[in-house]
Image 1 (tube, rainbow, N blue to C red):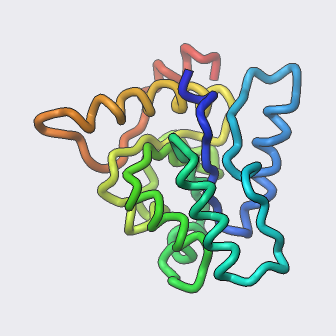
Image 2 (cartoon, rainbow, N blue to C red):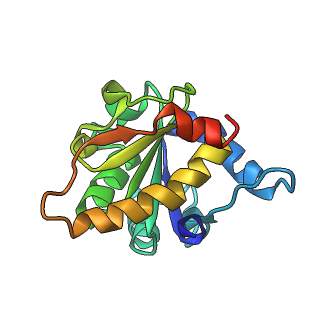
Length: 172
């Protein structure tokens, strides 16, 4: 199962509460959600120098197999500023050609192109709502599709979304 691979979660600092909620889902015995968090590798302290933080982020990303990018109204602008850590993370995700699951924090189930960082706008990806069942499903399904797509003669590009029946099948 892909979601058991090391998963890197990228987000704007304004969205850290959503990241913490994902970690809480993982710890809750009543929620079937799990991921091996790449953020648990080589902790970087807020007091560290920017170069140290970037180095640690690079180490985390080099040890990951898939990524989740939390999407909100602050994601794209922040990912476009070269001074932000999110910019560095998004650039590294693109450079390493990692599978991306975009998670819409506003619960939308559709592609929200206006919120996707420009660097990843043409990256083959999937957009899902901020719910543990569909995120878990995407970490299994999309990552496998992404890896098959790499070998395709005419590979898919850009963001996609699941049809309503997928959500219905998951009880959402």
